Every structure is written in C-alpha cells, then in structure tokens.
Image 1 (cartoon, rainbow, N blue to C red):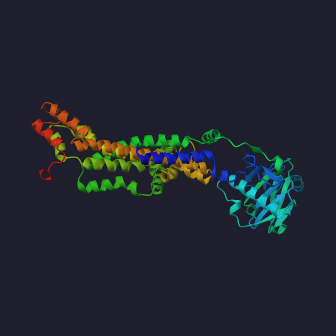
Image 2: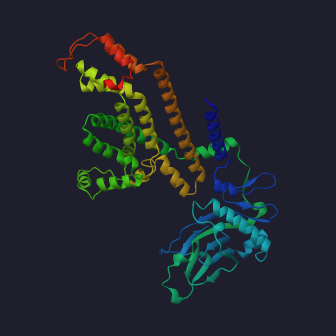
Image 3: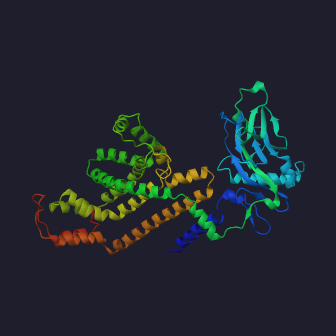
Length: 493
C-alpha cells in the first residue's frame, strides 16, 4: 500500500473520530460544561459562576391558528406546563418573557445586564442546537426585550405568555393589538418561539460526559443506514442494465456506416453532457401523464414516477454513456486484420464478439464499468427530480447528504460524505491496480486474453465453421504470429 493511500485512509479515520467525539457540530457548540467535568443535558444549559440555568428547552418553528375546543383564539404555540421562560422572535425584536416567581427562585434579576447577557448566551446556544437547519437567534440583528408581563404589545401584534386553555394546556398566543387589525396574518407576528424552564444552577440537569465508545455507539446507532442499501441496490441493478445496453450499443454502432454512426454516437453520449436535472425532467415528462407513454403505463396500472424503478432508470441513464464510450473505444482500438482473419475461418459475428472483442477489450471495458457504477452511486439531480426523496425507497446517499445538511444534521451529512469519499477512493484504486496489472502483460508482449486466443486458434484444426459457410484455409502459424504482433504495420491495413 502506497504512502498516499495510507495518508488518505488516516485522514478519513481522523474525520470519523472527530464526528464520534463531536456528535453534532451545532450541538457541540451549544454544550455547557461545569467546572467538575459534568455537562448539561441536551435540552439544558448552565454557565459556571451564574446562579441560574435552563431545563426542558424546546424550539417551536411553527404554530397554528386553527380553532379547537378548549384552546385560546389566535396564533398559538403549545408549551409545557413547567415552562417559565419564552422567547418570541418577532419582525421587530426578540421578546424574552420570564415568569417573575421563577426568576426570583432561580436568582435571575431581569434588570441586571450581566444576568441578561448570561441568559442570552444560554438561549442562543440551545436555539442553535435545536434549530434543525432553521434561522438562528445568533444571526438575528434584532434588539432583545426582557419582560415579566404576561402580555406585551409590539407594533400591530399582542403577545400573551403561558395562557391556560380550557383543556388545561398552556400556550404562547399572538393576536392583533386592536380590533382595527383583525385582518392581520397572525402567523407573520412570530417567526419562531423557544420555551424552557428557568431554574437554579443546582437544579440544572447534568450528566457525565460519555466515553468515546459510548459516543460511537450513540452516533452510529442513530444513523439511518437505508440510503446505503438503497444506493447499492439501485446502482447494482442499474449497472447490470447499463452494462448490457452499453456493450450492445457499442457493438452495433461499430458496424454501422459513418453517417449513421455519428448520429447514434451523439444520441448515446448526450446524457453524459446534459445536466442531471435536464435528464430527470425529460424522464418525468416521458413517464408522466403529459405523454402517451406515461398515460399508457398509468392506464395499465404501472406507476414509475417517484418509485424505486424510477431511481434505477435515472441511474441507468447517467451511467450508460460511460459503459458505451469505453466499450466503443476498446472495440475501435482492436486490430481489424485480426478480426478479418477470424472471419476467414468462418467465425460468426457473435462468436467474434464473445471470443475476441470482449476478452481483448476487457481491461478498458472493466474500467468503464467501475466508473459507471460509481457514477450511478453518485447520482443526485436526475434521481431527485424523477424519483423523489423517500426514505428507504428512493433516498440514496447523495440525496441523504443534502437533506441531512438542510435539516441541521451536519454530523450525519459528514458521515455520508466520508463514506462517499472512501468508496470513490476504492473505485479509483481498483481501476489503477487493474490497469497496472494489465499493463505488465502488455509490456511482455501479449495480454493473457491474447495468449489464450492465439493458443485456441493455433491449436484448432483447419475446418469450416458450421455457420460460417466456405472459408479459405490459412496457415495457423502465420495467424498466431499475426495475433502475437498487435502492432501490425499500418500500410498493411
């Protein structure tokens, strides 16, 4: 194993260790640790030297204004009964409501700037770790307003805190400030809300930091591995289909006239240069309700769009050109006189393809096949457009990376990135090793496939192929010598 290989593997291992040691980037930044090494639980916060802290933190990205029995009128967020602190991010400022009795018990002085600063730090950290990719308090340039009043008017909106409903639940409620604004969209009055319980420092929920093994168990145990199996299953089947179609297309294209060959080559290669989203859009149009093909399939109970077969089709479309181009290049590089010599022996075109063209062109075809598999594994745009994002069905690794990152699960997204990098590295390593292995035989004169074919041709008796018709008898040793020298003078062609 080369030094470069070892270095790359070491880097990937270091990244994995970092992910395990820090279960989540956002969460790690919001981690609050005590002087004796304990740390606040995931929904808690504390700061050494500050006499209060937070428990039971919750972020509410969306509320509701639908009327239900026992619930107050207005746009509302359901909160815990033990909630004693609420933040509301409004279009004008960030309102922090603190229950007066809880503040007194916790030792929080709402009028002191130092207490406000410490509480803001706790709220910003917990808000970030619970944001799930949404907007953050730390990014907001709005002014912070602290209050203990149960109701507060800000602009056109009136905010009420810990309102008890007829069903016994508690809510944060937004209403119009006066009757003249009843037509307001109340949902515009609050971007999102956070709530927690303000407690004394000694009452903050803490735990001992987990060991590396425990972190690894939690991290790897919490990952949904279905995207990996969906990717393997999808890419595997797509490769089988693309391999068969690519070889067949290359074989038939090679034997056509130059004018038709150029047209076919353009049609077969164009998916390689088109943006993946364009390929996905065209597949969506083809198999959707807008075309005769799609309507016919739907009429016969065959639904392809946003299904696993759609993911396979997407992978086939983007990987097929790689198999086709490498196979065509391998076939065109073969010695045409050798192929013609086989025809004079009465060999059929099918036999020439399977016994000569495939074995001699296999090194290039194998490399293209591996690249096609990697391309199918890495497909994103076409699959998302045509097959959608359904966990366990069409969600492949690239799609999982995107949506995990969008959902704020940066550590899981990084894990899948490491998996893709490692897989891509192994693909390239395999191609290089196989190419180097094949090149050794090339340097010695004949490849193993060429030696095998020469031995077969040299050892067979001169006879007519049962399907080849009459054929001229030629000198077997001359044919073997011809095949042994794959650099025949061009003047003889």
